[in-house]
Image (tube, rainbow, N blue to C red):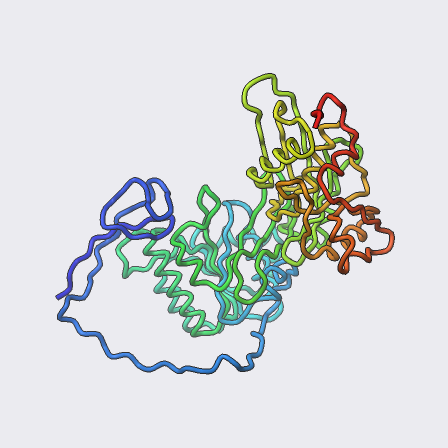
Length: 464
């Protein structure tokens, strides 16, 4: 006999508990636990059907790369690893109004214009609203199939009869399965709807793109199991005050992770940015103290960014540390190294750090560029306008090696920079010893060597 089971699920991580609590013990989220409808669990008298033996094959063998379909948007194809893979599922998340629906509508229209069968299912807007956006984007004439529905049973019946090569669901939080007695957007509904859509994509062979909402912390809303079910997870990032948009891959079973695509929001939709380094540095002024250019790497793409630092006197109290686009904990560590190992007095100053352009930097190779910007701000002397910086800084002040220096140097030379400040051991060994023509290598072994070049005034230096 079936036994009823009460359970409470966390809307943030999907963890199940026997009773309600104000805070989820699994992920720490507050007020995220809600009661889900009763389920039935088979009693001890129920017997399960016997299982079948699965086929076991040797590890050694040949496998052809999966066929891909290019979307016609090069930046999107780069993040996907070369294009959409048949029978794959992609989850795209981002803040409301960041441009997720715009990007996917543009990609769907281009694929439809290339002769592919594409179906765009919207659960948040009406058909007329999508048509208005298509007119604004200039893709209203594309032979794109459009539907406005939230009932998953109806959508599944449509997909069973459709020869579509790409299906876009906007968004997964609006889908509703009538066999589950809960509202759309709940953990159970999102998980069941995603499972059913992914099952259809695998069985019918079409590429599936799911649009997902994000929480106030920036993570994808709904149970984490959805991220494990899909083949790729893409985040669409950007600041409302900037026109730049960054599409970042955090999971990809068919390509590299941490790959990025750069777009610019215009009145005609999202435009690709083929050379993001030139765009990020377009408004840079090289004669301002506290500015340094970082030669970074996002996935396989080298990107040059401007790091800005500002020091303000703090008459009393705890000094303020404000960071935009970088890790605040790493800034505190670097400030401690500058003060302890290099004799730069920063404890009486408020420090403000900003990565211009709205891109967030995650790699430790930015340490040297941040240190150069802070030392320049402390001395009120600008860095050399034609110099790029990259290198990791250790707690003793040594400058450590970083990966793929040759790609960073080539990008710097392509944009007209004449000097690269980098770790000493890296400059003396490996392929980085042969820089591109016109680019000079400036070796730095210890952070104090870099700080000393700015000739900081005695008022900001300790006797050490």
